[in-house]
Image 1 (cartoon, rainbow, N blue to C red):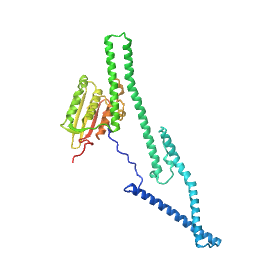
Image 2: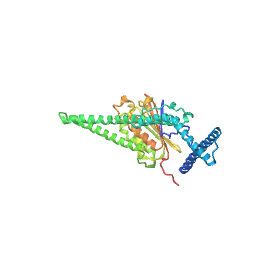
Image 3: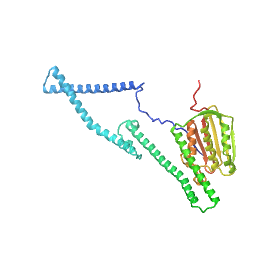
Image 4: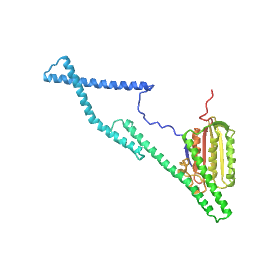
Length: 386
């Protein structure tokens, strides 16, 4: 038995975060930075001044030279400035090439990503500084690699999405164009005309459903889809969905058993209705004639759990791990009988996410599947009273 669980991803928190001063606001942070820089500058100034004073004393003793007080101070200050300039020049000659060698690969990686080339992988071992994986440069390298990998996945998903949409649209359009051309040419019987017109009507409805589902999925993914929670009887809703699907399961002589307690939930009724409809239709579609579907619902003080179990064809582990992806269709050997767009379960998962719930799939190839939806009793977007 294969089990896969999908829920809203938690926010990623990098391991071993860099230590920063815990200041209350930006103003204090700016004061802290300014103070640090002033302190560093004063430390360097007094360091060069002390070194200049020591060198002057050595030179005076060696040259048997004894300048007056003011001249002595001017010589020491001038020496400090010369030492500072020399120190800066030496540091720039040594440190800048090293810094450039560290930064240049990062800049090149950003340029490639900006051009749309996400095949980027930086070697963290090029950072020869102490600190291991906690060194800021190494952390930056890991972040760039992770970002490039995620962008590469998104680009692949985008290309697959475009390819799938094109295929889903092209297939019914080709069918409709072919039958329309046949009708236009004439020379067919009235029964053939009726059959061809029925096919054109079916394909046009399929295109309409695809368009509606794409718009709904886009709206759900944007995070701005209307959400109207209300208190209602979930057990009644499940029975209403099964009743709406009666022609489908009666035609295949499938037995459906609905066992639901008298339970209420605060959620968006219309959205959850589509979740149950998608799950039930999916179960009917892949259950063999004469099979059975069992729907169970139960609740405690915090959560509601709904199980939809079928005796269908089941799924492989690979299919189960991708079942909620857009346009993915499991059991491709039966896809010629399944006229769905492959968006139903993606929409269902987005709706479940919107309710702060999660969905779990247990399946065994050739035996059947169980979809388990767990939702909070109270909608996460319900305003608290009092």
